[in-house]
Length: 410
Image (tube, rainbow, N blue to C red; front, side):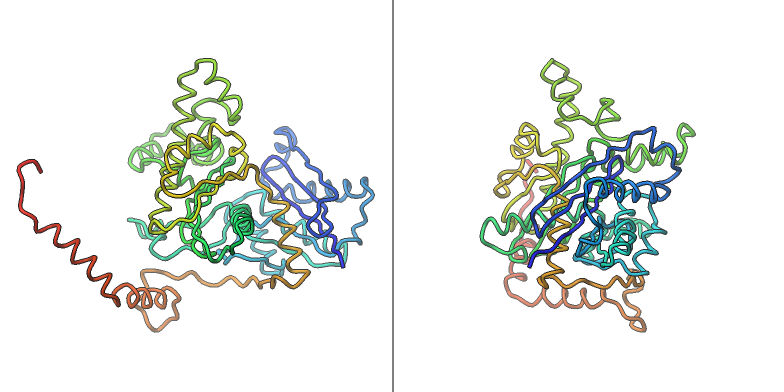
């Protein structure tokens, strides 16, 4: 038995759809949205009916009957943190997409899927939204309690590429330690340990490498001064971090081919900036190797920027000592959505129920009157970390290094 799947991927300047029979694509279309078109809407949420009707009309023109679909799946948006998986668009999920903390076109994926699924008489789903959260507790803590690190990354493509690599190498995703780097308009670098992303950079909040349109991590002192300088509004500063930072701030363009062409014509400034971006990517790959304690099976480079061999070669030159490097250009998000939908239809994957719960407050971890997954994790970590002679031996060896005689050359 074969299944027919509609996958929907709304982006900031485009909406992409594809129709699959099982995992075979039989139709696809990309709607490019001009700045003039988008300027008619105050927020991405206001574009809902416009984008939805565009998809419905296009499918009708292509002679594709909505009633022929077995399932509709859309890109996941900025909802509450969830574990990796496929989620049916239930009322709670739809509510959080409609009232998302941050405005982003990806929030429309599940909502459009829900409405079209209702017309088709089938169910709607999302898969691996950007808020997939599998981070270990240590990775969340910063020096300011009010500013914890959050897990917001290209989960859909990163997970799909990691599973693809595992399959190609006759292994399983949950048996491998991988560093996956998605390089697009935003860049995220993540540590995948045995099927879980235990640490990641957050491109949405401007953390990690800078990218074609995002600032990456910035020095906090000067940033605070800039915020209170009176030169910029709140909105302008937000855009500086996400939308008008990175390559476009330095070079006036997000186009990698254009920048490399400028380098070839002798533009030293362009060379400096593009190499600096690659350098920050390589540094984050190194940081994720630490998260995996140096036990890395492979480094996977993916996303649109990975089409440039010059970029991937430059990054590899800094970090290929860590692990073998494999390049998977492009995003493949529509296929990833379709594969997740097919898994639900065949029973290979079980759809999860979206039930947002309260956040675990680290400051309340000692309060035993309330349940805490964080407390349970830390209790287990305490036992695991100090139960073997090997760990204690390593600690003694470290302490011995501080008892060596002082030498003048120190």
